Image (cartoon, rainbow, N blue to C red; front, side, top):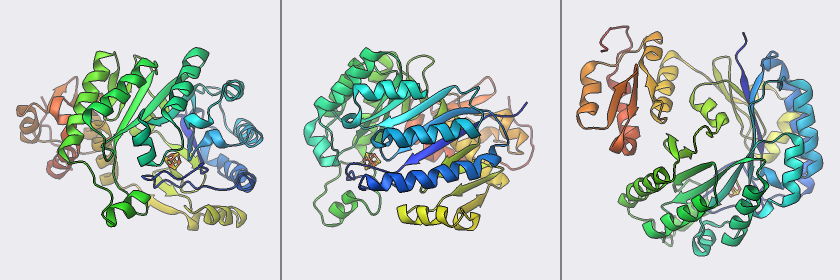
Amino acid sequence: MSFPIQLYVHVPFCEKKCHYCDFASWELPAVQQRRWTEIILKEIAVRAPLAQGRPVDTVFFGGGTPSLLATEFLERILAEIRSLYDLSRLREMSIECNPSSLKKEKLDLYHRLGFTRMSIGIQSFHADELIRLGRVHTPQAARLALETLAADGRFQFSGDLIFGVPGQTEKSFLASLEILIALGPDHVSFYGLTIEDGTEFARQQASGVLIMPEDGIYNVMYTAGVAMLRRHGYHRYEVSNFCKPGKPSLHNQGYWNGVEYLAFGPGAHSLYAGKRTVSPRSFEGYLDWGVGGFAPAACTEEILSADNLVSEAVLLGLRQSDGVHLGRLREMGFTLPEDVLGKWEKVGMLSRDGGAIRLIDEGWLFLDEIGSDLLARGKAAPVEVFR
Ligand code: SF4
């Protein structure tokens, strides 16, 4: 039996660059969509042999703002994927959308093309917060997009929020979350704002005009958000991702579980054959790379060592409510001594059952610390120390 793989298409176009965003995305004139499409079609074809005929489990169009992509180009890209990859066992096909670019006619198009799931970048339902974040949409547009999706009923859909926005309070964050929940998404993601180099927020911070909330407020907002989602029947299946029963993002779960994937577009990360590769990140750099024949030497490549694989298994496993399977670590030659696990169990942050360790309660707030501790004090030797 051949293991499935996943496909990711990075669509780098945005109406306007958000103040916090360091993704490979740009405000580009529509004419650039054609140039990008011609190259990505070639990349999809050039990389097809790497899939070795394996079935594709999920396809994800991310960005950027994929919903800005002209119909003609989206159709051509999907036709190329369908002709070169085995989609007969496809379980999910997602597209990220900005509320302002999601129209009723688009839903008919996406349904016809086979999309099953939409991820909508909401971020906040407060106009002042949206303006501060540099978003192009209004709270009304966000509501309308989600109401349209709910009434349509043909897609699973997810809404994203950001917390820790300058000027945001716990009350305003929870008010946004409450509005989102009332609009009935199958899935909710929320992320704490971080300031990334090269962004408008980094410039504002350097010049002293951006005052970030105190660190402690992040934990308060996160914990209150988790509690609200739980009350409304959303299960935390990953530290920042929540879903109604049976409605996780299968594509993202694949990433966290080490499923191999091929990714197309500028700055796209792929994982296959034990290595991670990253395509040239700038828009023109990516196009030039394609024109020159997609030379592998132009990509960043990281061969995943045994240590890398253990780190990923521990850190990505801890992020998920399913936790880290100790048997899998043992197969990788890595064991966690009893005293290391016991230390975190004793303080009520980690539990052990069914052969797995999982974060519990406050442990979710200490994911990085616990992960680092387990990796630093675990043993890369098959010592049998488990209950
Ligand atoms: S819409 Fe998304 S990808 Fe585009 S600039 Fe804003 S955060 Fe970045």
